[in-house]
Amino acid sequence: MGICKLCLQEAVLLKKSHIIPDFMYGPLFDESHKIIKATPKDLIDGDKKRISVPSSGEYDQDILCQNCDNKIIGQYESYARPILYGGFNDSKKPIFQTFRNQNDIGLTECLNIDYKKFKLFLLSILWRASISKRPLFDKIDLDFDEEIIRKMIITGDAGEESDFPIFLIRISDPLFEKSIAPPRRSKDPKDRIFEFMIAGIQYMFYCAKDRTPALVLLATIKKNNRLLMAHMPRELILDQRKKAFGV
Ligand SMILES: [Zn+2]
View 1 (tube, rainbow, N blue to C red):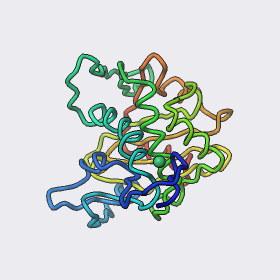
View 2: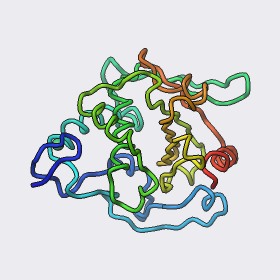
View 3: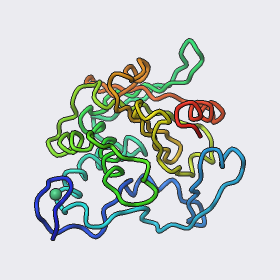
View 4: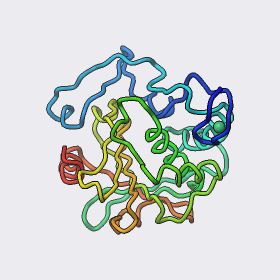
């Protein structure tokens, strides 16, 4: 027994709660079942490190009760999985259209993405990383936002579009698709940007409302169930990360 970090009730706590859901690790395993855990710079330099990790990825124990992990967070995960990795088969199928904008940036417009479920799924990863004690997530500390996001997850309230907007960037590169980078926070602490790079997608969470770039507000998931995902070659990603995260 212990206090669950999501519902704050005394309950039997699970021995295994994933911080990043299992299915997001799936694409990372290569034929020899090894995951590449490296910084993007390592990948560019060709200094990739293959580290054997358990097939179930990183998890914490004694943080969540069964109801919170399997039902509350579980419902967001079940919704997000086919959006990210395919396999939708009902009429509410998302629609993806890829085009180039006037600056020759590749963009995918995603329609029919449930604002509440998909946003809360992404925020649940950020929140879990913040409460996690695993060293991989030690740069993720939401501070006062941890309680705000906890309430959003448990009450199923995804808030306004400008609350914790998220920018997704697809990096078209086979090495990035097989890697996970240690999550980071922005170089300038006032920016409060948190970054995850998992299996070829960079997820950027913007927690400082007054410092969120207009482009992020345009691209983040909207209440009309639309989001824009940018595509970037790996060289541009390195530039952008250097500016924002100092790496
Ligand atoms: Zn709970």
